[in-house]
Image 1 (tube, rainbow, N blue to C red):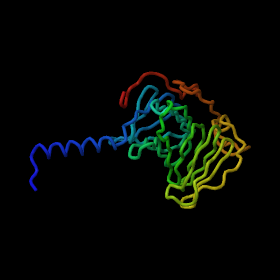
Image 2 (image 1 turned 90 degrees about the vertical axis):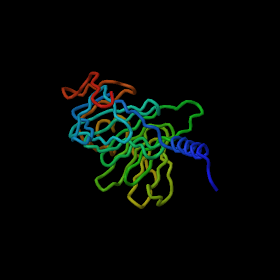
Image 3 (image 1 turned 180 degrees about the vertical axis):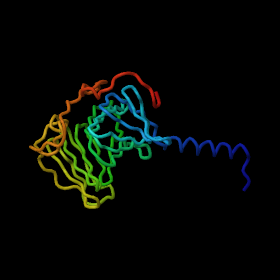
Image 4 (image 1 turned 90 degrees about the horizontal axis):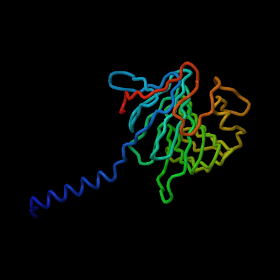
Length: 238
């Protein structure tokens, strides 16, 4: 069978449109607070980002020692408070995944999406997938890739990244640990507040870091001392 030139062009155009509709949209992440160092990996080395800069899907970033940063994804009503020594990627190759944490810890704060908006808002780690159900939670990833999640508001559905074990619904006031290939543990009470987490306490009664102020949703500055940065630098994507 011989195809006409018009038929071939129309077929290719249809395939191109279908492929474009399936590809995840590129998201923009606003840098709304930085204490000390937030570093973006580039072909020429690392670039320090400041308040007012933007990062995009696919970017790889990390915070330095005794550092802290806040990123906001307005489109998904999401904010991430990144703790020190945390390495992560702004995800782009899977619909719904907003962050891929390699190592370290962060607090994820999600507002409500518009009525009828059913998009997933996921965070992944080397061992787990975390799906929010309108919530505020902290997640910590060890150097071995094991994951701990502590929920402060709402509910998080957690499962092993490779499909091992059962999915768990972790409610406010509960925590769960996910080891590689073993699935999440049964949820247990963690006895922590969001403020405890911001102060560096990851387990009840245990301090794990210096004092940090609890962030305000949507804040564009951080009063973390002389290391804080404010301003409108647009070094990356600005």
